[in-house]
Length: 288
Image (cartoon, rainbow, N blue to C red; front, side, top):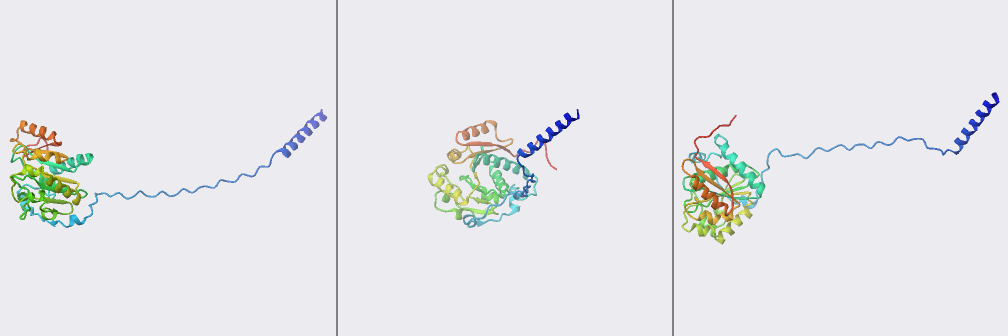
């Protein structure tokens, strides 16, 4: 029994020695180097407010106009500063217009009304100053109500150019436009034009307005046009704009008049909406 155990132990030892001799030598394990993690860079700074556009030579060459705040308030132009709480309504309208126009790549908007005394020129003027507070948006306001111009008197301008001369190509930008602040240009009109429809749809007018757009680099152009139902001026000019806004007057404009204007404009351009002006009663008031 003892001999059998010794023989088994000897056989086991011999097998172990043969395995050690035949097994390949393995190198000792080395720890893997740790790749350092590169520090993450902070994201680029984002401007909290819109950045004003740089002033180019064409813009700087326009004469500077300083409005009379008292005159503006007397004429119901209230969006020059933040003091009047009614400004919020125009700012809301401005923002809605700006969003739709930017989404569609539109730049020009006609502002008209069914009849006279709806307040379209007052709405146009308030929108112009409301747009001027949008520092990254360069805006122009043009008085194209050639038969009864009123933008200049509404804004209290003493010296006004001839829109007829500008549209016919006789005068240029510097003789026609003034600028307020860094991003609003205004072209008033000093006298009425009898052949307004022919002038508005003429080739010279299209050329003058295209030059204005290119040289001034305008983002939004507000065209204050005459009432629609009085003459054919709006119908003649509507194909030249991207969209239109109809200003109606409470207790004065009828539903039929608004419908006719909306239909006729929709055949020639995009109708952005209808504004109810001179409304004395609102269902609710919002504020802080």
